[in-house]
Structures are given as C-alpha cells and as structure tokens.
Length: 487
Image (tube, rainbow, N blue to C red; front, side, top):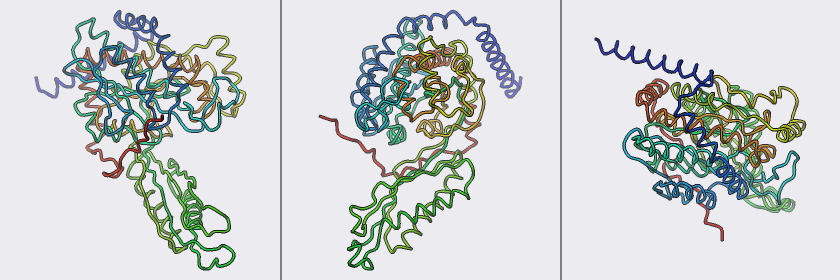
C-alpha cells in the first residue's frame, strides 16, 4: 500500500476518533479514566483554590514574583517534581520535571500581577492601599491551575505506569518583561513535544485564535536646558520632541490597518515649568496579528520619532524593551481541548455568585453585554484574533502549543480592570480556574496515551507555520529587568 494512502487512512482514523470523542463528550459519557481524573481533581480542588487566593493576596509584579513562584514550586516539589531554577537569568523562573522519555508535555504557568490594580474581592470599586499591584489578568489562577494539571497528570502516570515526561514551566514577567522569550533563549523549551496553557477570560473557549504580535520601546529625546523665560531661545526642548512624535503617531493611526493597535504614555516630561526640558521619554507599543505588517508600521513610528527630533534639534535614542510573536494556533490541540472542555463543562454560579455578578455587570457598558449564563457554556472552536499580546506566542512558533480560555471573569468583564481583579480573588474566578485545570490535565493525558495525537499536532504546527521560522525581535543583547528580592 503506498505510503501516502497509509497516511490518508491514518488521518481518517484520527478524524473519526475526534468525532467519536466529541460525541461522547456531548453525551456526557466520558471514558472511565477521565471520570477517575475529574473525580480526583474535584476532591482536591479546595487546596488549589486556597493557593490561588494566597497568590492573589501577595500580588507581585513582573520580575518580583519571589513568594508566588516559591509557593507554586513548593507544591510541585512536594509532589515529586525535580526543580530547576533561575532559567534565563530570572530568579523567579523555574522548570519542574517528572518522568522520563517521550513525549515531553510542557504545561505553562504564570503568576505576575499588574501595577495599580489592587482591589478587594467585592463588586464595587474599592482599592486596597495606594496604587498597589493586583491580579487584574488572573495570573494567580493561571499558574495555580497549570500546576494542579501537571500534578494530576503526574499522579495518573505513576498509578497507571504511563511513560513520558511532564514539565511545568514557571514563567515570570508575562505582563511587562517577555519572560518566555528569555526562557526560550536559554534553551528551556528544547526537547518539548507539546506545550499546553490557558488564560483567564469571561468565556470558555478552546484555543484556535491568534493574538497580536507586538513591539515596544523607550523613545528618549535629549535636548538643551535653559531658563524658560530668561533665555528660551537657548533651549532645545526634549518635551517638544515627545509631543511632536505623539502628534505624528496619532495622525498615523488613520493610515494603518484596522487590526493595528498603537498606544503610548509619557514616562518623563521634565522637572519644572520654568526649565526647558533637556530630557523626555515616551514609551510606546505597536501591535498587529501579522509580524511583517507590524514591521512596516514600526518603521513608520520610528520616522515619527525622528521627525520630532529633527524639528526640535534634539537627539533621539531608541531602546527596544519588549517584542512578542503572535500565537500560532494548532488545529489538533484545539479540537482535543474542545472534547475535554465539553466533558468538564462551564461555570455555574450559586445564588451569591449570581448576585455578585449582577452587581458587577450593572457597572459595565450595557451595549453588547453577553448573557450572564454564557459562563456555563463551552464555545465551539473558532478562528479569529484575540486583541491582546502574550509571550506564549513565542513558544507557539517553536513547538505545537494549545491555549484555551476559561470563564474566570463575569461575562462582560475584561482583563486589566478592577472588576477582573475582584473576580480573580473569589469563587467565580476559582471555579473558572478549575475548568482550565481539568481540561489541561485531560488533554495532557490524552497526548501521553496516544502518540498519534502528538504527531498530528506536529503536522498542524508545520502546516500553520508554512515554512516560516521563528526569530524574536527582542535584541540579542536584551537582558531581563530583574529586580532584587525585597527585604
């Protein structure tokens, strides 16, 4: 029989298996081993929800996640994983490994918080302290769920004498540090066959969406100080250069593709109104789902900066501080995740949780607000763009990667808000976290038991990549902005 015919028949068998499993999931008749796993996770869920709450309370920002990373690493160490720390020169990064041989399944976890989003876990805006950090992106849930899934997979492998390797990746600084890019450069993902991860959201969705590639930089202008009243003609204002650049960028927005995003803030604008500013800095990020298009937009942004410097007779320095690839979806892993997420089911609210949710939703814009009951549903696999960026994208261009979304936020709540911080610290967020943990655990165990799925995921990866390689736009000499451990 010709080899290509064998391959075609193998593909048909795999497709039939997918359809059979999906039908089984819809009928709520999972295989016995999956029922065993879900029952076990249900019995141990309280421990991990408590862990997620502890990390929520700590709320450490990028490169400062010392306590958070240690809490998760301690859980894995206690479960028998071997821990390797300080990956890529980042003290808050680690890899926890268990098992031997192929396939090697990587499960990615994050645990960094966001500055300025400290909030009580209540349905009204009530910050805790002044501009403290908060888990407005739900990474306290993300890291905990991924660790729970890795430990569950390990225990099943041990009890069923299953071969292969499970690795948990403790990934710092997703928000403002390109942590996974630095881990990649240290060779952290070499030898992995599959990567699985998830992200908090207001819906349950198997992952087939791409994200926005991005590039960010500090644009620093240096001029000449002078007395702003006595001798303004002797000054060359670095602030004027920043403002001209910002104005040029704002006009550029009209002439870029609609999927593009450009945002900035002035991080330094001078020291006093009566001194011509000799130094000013603008921090800017450009995003687009297609890397070549992003490159073209970036070149035009640089011209805006050069124009500001030229017009004000100042000098310009550009430091690239972040660059992320878009997520490369994987058809096989998305379909497999859909099967398992339907077995797990969505999030169902208690009466108290529904009251919490309704109070939160009353404060949101009402146009286009999704149905409250949508948190209990699992969406079909669908392609498209999620309009945010993540360093998971850089992993997805190196190895087949599956990323799902779980409803940790009340439907209609978006990340990076006080509302999402509140949800991440209470039972609504914790229930969504368990949906993700269970889905990832089942998906990892499917892959470990069916090598053909790993191969199909690799084929999906190669097809999506289309011969394109991966090269980070972060400069080769860029170092992680590690911060010392607080006293």
